[in-house]
Image (cartoon, rainbow, N blue to C red; front, top):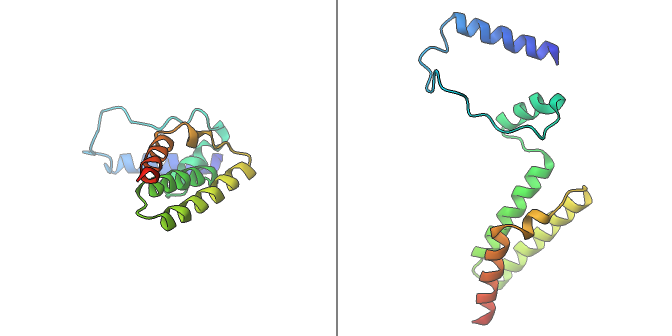
Length: 125
């Protein structure tokens, strides 16, 4: 990791000397950094690189998929569509559990309450 850090530092120093950082938006103000305190220190650089390139670790991607599916379930227009999303959500939940991750975030979220409320309203009609 020292090679990568040295390369980055050298590139930053050259950019500063060439004035490439002059007049940037937010100059002189503190940076708004993500809280990565739960990421082991030796993995932080690689996680930042993955995040900047648009990649999410498997657990985070599955969590995002689960939340998106809950939203789709809420807005489904018919039973067949809703059942399809439920099947996909069950598969995502199974993948999370099989990989050793928790799915508690689904039960404790506002999404879960909204899904239940919406489904109850539809079933009463």
